Length: 423
Image (cartoon, rainbow, N blue to C red; front, top):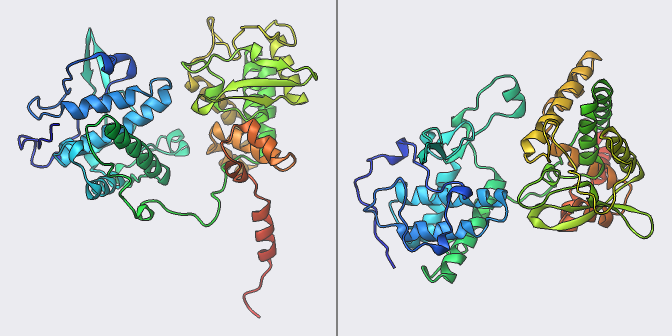
């Protein structure tokens, strides 16, 4: 196997220059398992790291069944390649435990030249050629939702790697090196040799509060969606989306058509007892069925009637669950769903401000689509068996569902609220 050092033809301070992207989008990559020769793009052809590139490509290509998973794995592998080749000047096949620790420290505080303030494409198409996008960066810091809304830019100097980011890095890189071992191109996994991961991964003694909207805010949001629907029938879709996200705590990815699934009206099905269920393909390509409450069934009937359909679907109905407002076919982008929800949030925010509820409105301004799922679960877990909520939510374990139980925190704070400091 090749274990060559990168030549010193690189800049004396490579961290002062933004690196060029290496791995393109899935649709522009050929099947690596059918190729015999691998040329490393945007790199000195004499560095001899085609093996690194070949097996990195093969590894991430194996996750082509889900674009989100592919993109997440590509991000982690590309960052490692950039650091190993450009900064460390070493093949990834030579990396040891202390090198990985050095790399993690690098990711926690990357050079400013490596940090962007918005997500952009790695490559752009010019004619028949794919060319490097000079605006692309391996790391990105985005402004908060509220800052972005008010026109404030993110500051690269404030970039931090989140704990979830560190956990993702450990997980992906460990899988990658295990893959290299199985392919017999390296002999050890330097990631699992890091015994003291605690210096990188914090342990929490208490549960992280779930980000959710209040019951009052949800009342305003639902009422706003109803007002919009009364003013324009196309907003019946808005009302239905809001009901799905809260009432069945769906993820927005479970509403759109993608390479994983194509949600249709026929996914609402009645069992032999007359109970309605929604059949969903969710996170990790796992299928599940979700309880359809009486209120949710009424919301479905209202929505279908607005579309000129029968009140209830048949089992073989192929009408898209969320159709486009303009044109034919289903919504295929989560961005469209986010835009619909954000418009409803914005209208609700303004209505709360108009009624003098500035504090509640300010909290709603920071809310995201996913908060609706959190809110629905948090409310249901108060009155339903935990295991029922777990199964409807598609949680892998009860531990995840238990994050939404906040009664113990209420009782804990209530017992300590009136304790005295002075005797």
